[in-house]
Length: 152
Image (cartoon, rainbow, N blue to C red; front, top):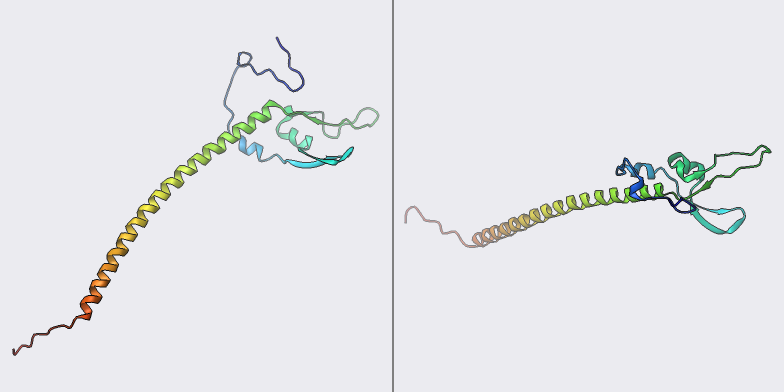
């Protein structure tokens, strides 16, 4: 069997059990704090990523090492981050959730727009009828009224 190595993870369906779709990933992802930063040893280059200890709180499989760890001599043991397939899967699941929400909102908007256009059409018809009644009224008002004299 091929082994996992740097940058690759065995993902063949034949090696997996208890396969369940990821749900509610948006709430998890919005807790992440993407940052831009420069490394102390390369100050001229801005990079983007996460602080390892913050990422570890939500995606521990993406982080190697422990926050503020030191060796026996007190030297720092720095944390590192690897882009894990679980983070990518979470991002894709979130995109699918957002797409579903967007599709639902778009359907609602389309229905509301159709209702609005129907009401607008009705309003314009009533307005036209009103304008005609008003014009008829003004026309009739401008004509002299012939009064019948009771003695004639």
